[in-house]
Image (tube, rainbow, N blue to C red; front, side, top):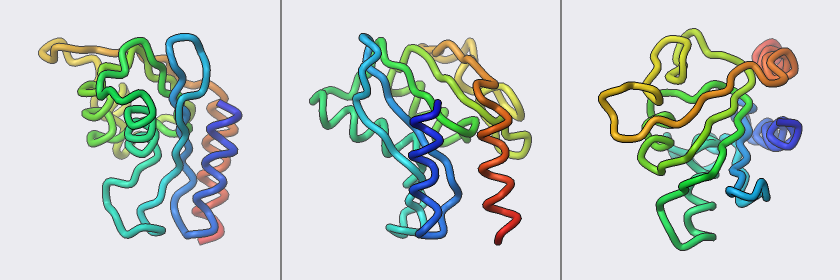
Length: 142
């Protein structure tokens, strides 16, 4: 999570919300990282999680990220949760919950919906206070 927090800080200079993600392979090695780049590249889908998933898939040459773990500073939104299910990641670890748009247990629980064919394990609240503080400070300065 500390690596994800450092990645999140990279989003701030472009005016992006500081969310960082790290995709770990089945062996625990870092496959890819991402931070929000919506403002930087003008792409509404350029969320940290989606970018990390894309980069990991490109590196592996495979869209199935079976056995992988995504670590992210903020609870995934509906778009990102859908991408996590579709990519077949084994687990999602997040820091701060998102009561307004979270789709991994707060507002919705898309990633664990029994109607879907794949349901990653969810671990929530890792370094939650640090993750929330990074976001709060960003919005306070804005």
